[in-house]
Length: 179
Length: 346
Figure 1 (cartoon, helix red, strand yellow):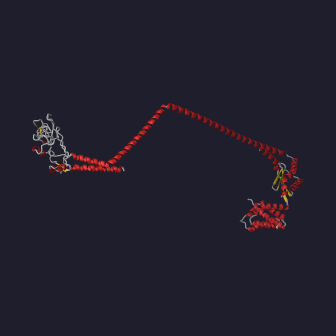
Figure 2: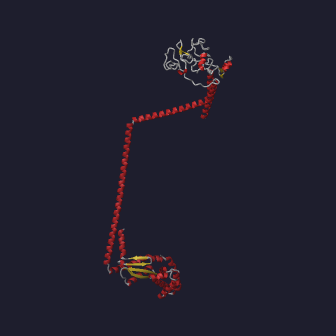
Figure 3: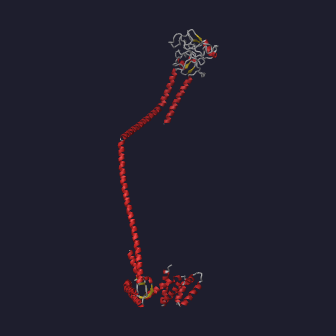
């Protein structure tokens, strides 16, 4: 089930709070960290989403986890409000939308680079510089190896994909032969 | 209309019959009773030999008492004595008003003769004179007694009584003064009947006859028309029979032409169907061939690309990775160029 519309409204609200308090980056980081914990722990999702568990106990669990993770007060308040409104299931989408709003606010573009083999740091720096030059924005690059690419590099930036892998060339070659 | 005419005719006929019956009843003597007529033996001629077994013959009753009747005595003139027509009457050679009777011939019995009365008293089995084979025809009453029988008034000499009444003795049918019903009464009855029929039945009968005539004429016309039709049909059939061979040949030729046309049509249709089936079959074969070729090509391409991928995986080196990365670094800027332009425009 998609919670995009709900997540957009909540992310906009949280972003405005962070903007007022000047803690957008902290708030975005805290919610993203908790969203990763929430998505990766099924037991936590069951407990926090079970209506048979009393609301006080659920808030206590939530506050305990947030305390241990060292989340800010704004992040804790946001999580408690989401729990009371039974919107914790939309937390991963809210965190993603909040990161997008924060990046837009800071003029930042995130680029995901995949390669079949390892890439040197200087190459990634050159690629980041080239992407910043091409987009005119600050680019945050994340790298990941994928042997299925056989060879070459694939960059996903925003909603665009620049595919220079051998797998893509073979696929194109095969499609051209079949046509 | 027709029923009313029929009722009128029936009414007229009934009235005429009633009048005629009334007049006839008026002619009957008062107190007369219907007498059953006994067949009387007819005497044979005088020169006829006696027949055994004949009533009154000696052979019939040898004891001379057949049926209680006295034996017949043959007179000197050869006629049996005591039989009607066999008694001579010298005192009355002819009946008054009937001249011309032969002498010695007495057609009717003498009235009031003692032996005659005795005969009637004894049973009245003898017929009156005038009924024999040689007797003259009986007297015809022309006009006496138009109204009824009245013996006393009938003997009056005046014309009116004689016209209205007549004499008849019911006890003695051989009475010489007995008069039959007048012929004038029959004429009057017939005249009345004819008048009634003419008066009341002329128009309905004429109409009925006219209508019947019309019906008969219509039937004759219908029959004539039917006859003419039958004759025309007969003539047509005869003509057909005369030209049957030519018509048969014409029909055969027509059927042969139709068969030829049908044959051509069937052949053309079969040819068209054959062409169409062949075209469809060729199309299907071509489609199957294309599908098989595409399938083979796809399998070959997939196998070739898989083999190429495997070969590239085996043979790709670090230098190849670096070269491709360098080439990618040079091309990524060009690939993102539209994005930057779009962003600048925005």
